[in-house]
Amino acid sequence: MQPSRDSHANDHYRGKAPVNKEALEKHSKGPGIDLKRKTTTVKNKVIRTKLKKKEQAILKAAEASARNELLLTEEHGFLEAEAGETTTAYRQKQIVDNVDITSAAKRFKLDLQFGPYCFRYTRNGRHLLLGGKQGHVAAFDWVTKRMACEINVMESVHDVTWLHQETMFAVAQKDWVYVYDNQGVELHCLKRMNGVTRLEFLPYHFLLASGSKDGNVAWLDVSIGKLIARFNTNVGRISVMTQNPSNAVLCVGDSKGVVSMWSPNEHKPLAKMLCHRFPIMTCIVHPYGTYMATSCADKSVKLWDIRQLAGPVSHMFLRSPAFRMSYSQCGLLAFAMGNVVEVFRETSGDLKPYIRHKTARNVCCTRFCPYEDVLGISTANEFSSLLVPGSAEANYDAFEVNPFQNKQQRRETEVKTLLEKIQPEFITLDSTDITEVDVPTLKDKVEAKKNLSYIKPKPIDFKPRHTRAKGKGGTAKIIKTKKILKDLNHKEMIKELREVKAKEVKTKEEVTSKKSQNQNDYGVLNRFL
Image (cartoon, rainbow, N blue to C red; front, top):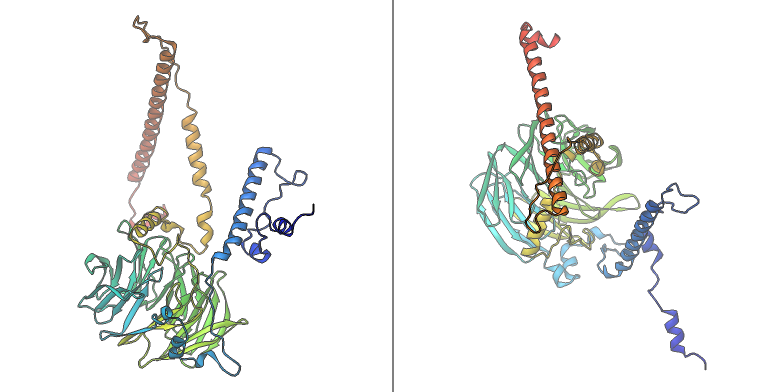
């Protein structure tokens, strides 16, 4: 009896489908550790077995990621021009007419009257915060056009920013920084942050950073309400300030063409880069922390490798100076040059014009929206949302940011981010410092633990009383009582040792203080003694 054609087909497709090799290489973590018996350097069998299991888990994770790429149906696509045409010739009306209804609804314009305006999107790209120079502040869901709050603070507004959630935002007003909730109710007035011109929020550290007209930079921990650091940068009025998203370092541009990088742990800049011969007009860092773009009044724009503090990687001249810039998640770079906004795209290693848009008045602020192919621009009397195909990431990580989160998910995310909050001490140029071990502190802790755990207490001469009651004088009861007494004796000894050490430290301090008192007082010359 010959096997049927169906049975041959079942044999051919039995088991899992083969994985695409390119996708597997993309998600691969590298060759791994050599665990062959003859060539490996790991001689311990137990450790070798554990490492083998770990390597297998890594391979399985890479394979699962490669298989699940089928579920990521969204892809970012760019505009493609026909022969003899350029993408800069396409107007917003033409783009709107050729996209789906959902995308077309994201192109809108707001007529305002209290400008010029600055604005911010939330990290998930769902909510928008507007701040007018003449006191107008509004927060709303720009996708559904649902208003959260709209107030007039009756003071000049210099900058606005969202905090860790869309339920709170900060406004830099005439004198101080104020914090409001999404109903427009004032929560806090931060009087330690006075004369602020620029605001930045560091989401992984829960720090609100500010730069003032006096040249002061300050970091405030919004989770505990504590001012972490505040000092003067000696660069004059801070009008150009941005953050590096990869290591949370503040990049401040000054009037000498220098970009200095600041951390709350140092009163001096971590690094300085001479970028231009003229004052810095604007500075922006790529969302992945790879490149930094700067511009100045001589119409030049330079791209720098901020990881190695080297460059310029690219140098170009525009038709007019770029007053505002913005980086998208996919590397598109937008320039605001007077009343013209131009988006550049990297093709074959060079930045080339991609989309051009003209407004009635000069552009005051420009920012790309995360996870949406949208570029927001604001002028003195309007806010416009422009469609820029291919500017944002097509797929989002719901554990990181979720544009469609509900109230319960928002609360869980807030608790999780608070538990995973990074301390300000880890704000350094090297973003991998957080993965290292503080070896000296760990050694001290281990030594202290050893000294405490290996103290031999005095022997206990314990003789239990003999009772005639049933079940009261058993051997197990006697052993348990002895153990309890031994532990109590151990704790008492440790307590006594700690008291002795504390007394020794106190006596040393008293001796040093007496010596210093016996010495003659020579005023400011005491430091030479």
